[in-house]
Length: 261
Image (cartoon, rainbow, N blue to C red):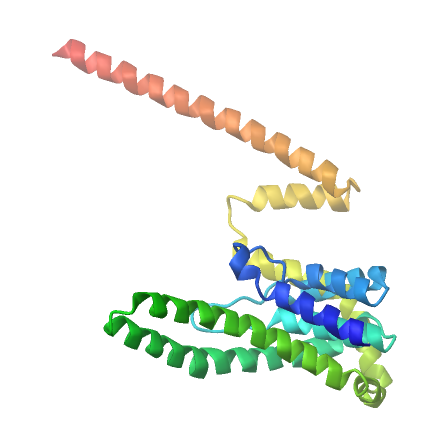
C-alpha cells in the first residue's frame, strides 16, 4: 500500500509537470494509466482503461476562460481505485468524471484565489524594484499547482481506496451494464467530436479515403498512413506543377507587355 501511494504521487507529480516540458501531453490518461497499471501489476488493464478514458476526454478542451474537468487527477485516481478493488473499465468510467470535476474545483480555487494573490505579490516586488523576487513568485505559483494537485491525488487515493468498494456496490447493476455498453460507442463519440472541430472541405476527401481503407479494405493503420502519404505526395507534385505553370505564364505575359512598349 505504501509503495502504491508513493508511486501514485510520483506519477501525478510528473503528469502535472507536462506544461514544463513543452506541452508534452504526458498527463493524458493514455500515458498515466499505463504507469498506474505498472504500479498495480496489471499493465494490460491499465492500458485498456487509459485508452477508454482518453476517448472520454478527447473532446474536452479549455475555450477562453473555461477550464475543463481535470483529466490528470481523473485518469490517475479512477484507474488506481478501479485496479485496487479489482474492477474494470465500466467502474473507472463511473468514477472518472466526478473525480475530474473535483480536480476542476481545485483548479478554480487556484486560478481564482491563490494565483491572483501571488500575482499581486509579484507586482508589489516589481514596484519595489525587486525583479528577481517578482520572477521567482511566478515560478513558485507554477510549482504550487503541480505540488498541490499531486498531493490531492495521493491523499484522495489513500483515503478513498477502502471506500470505493462500498460505493461501487451501491451502484445498480443496470447502470454498470449501461456504462459497459457505452464504452463500445465512446470511440465513435470521441472521433465525432474531433471531426466536428477540424472538419473542412479541404480535409474531407482524405477523411473518406481513410474511412474506406479501414472499413471496406480492412487495412491497418500503417497501410492507411502509407496511402495517405502517397496521396500527399501526389497533391504536392500537382500543386508544384500548377505553381510552375502559373509562374511561366506570368513571365510570358510580362515579356509580351515589355515587347509592346
